[in-house]
Length: 433
Image (cartoon, rainbow, N blue to C red; front, side, top):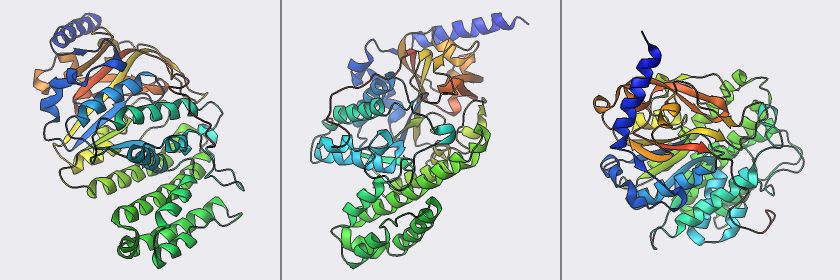
């Protein structure tokens, strides 16, 4: 059998099919969300939308998120969750509520350190260590996205943002929870005392102390809600959990000698994100729809059916997206952002920053369709042959997976050339402000 000839025929069939369906985008940063009207039928009646990116560290991610989120906001979505620390998500939400730029300067994942301990080093180390993390570029991109979206919704309605991840630059939650408890009574005051840091305690001792506080928050939730309100009480619980799990991830990931040994810490991290996402979604009225942002592997609808390619660490077999898709059958729309060639700003020195088109991959086939486009997939029986079987999908770190793409995504957004994050989008005063 002429396998090369078969593949060439399948790619040609894909190109012909995509010519009739692809929504080509000439200027990603200036694209009109009305261009995405062909998604209307897919979005209808969906409770959750996953916007999964192949790479956190590319410049095109901001334009992708801006365009898709403006479109979804126009269709009534008001809640946005991200694979981001709970502390960072809360502070972005504070900006969306108030317009006060100080919140965009106080994101611990991207450089704010005033909440961290001074008597102990709680920063990520080991395989996740190093000085190359593009913190200011990432902070700037998040700040710019928040600015672009804040005025999309007219008051008294507004957008809400939340993080699902552990606080892996742990400490800011102490500031957040102190503010939430400040106007309470006896119960809130007692919890504030119990959350006071103990000088010179070890990381394990702090984890144990926070576990005790979490148990009290759970048992006293009704009384605490009576003092500070139900939403604030729920946030206290989420913030303390994220702080505790962040310390555990920092501690346990330091002990991993190779990527395989990160499996257990990554699985615990994934479980934490599931708990946090479920907590927020369960607390919303049934008519409030949610967008989730994160890596495509986390936001995969059927990760057990995918076969991982061996580079770096990824989610466990049952991903965040897989579990939420099980919770909300038929109510999830998934869009994956993929790239062809180029480079990114990922910080791990042991892994590559360059993108190359892998022979026979889905990325290679999509690169022949256009430079930048959205491609709704539709029913499997209507797809060209190349999209009906398994494909190799390539992404960050030179990694990826082999999967039947329709099991994971309902639409693909493709950018032919990936570029590193720009240094920044707007000048702000220093992070210490």
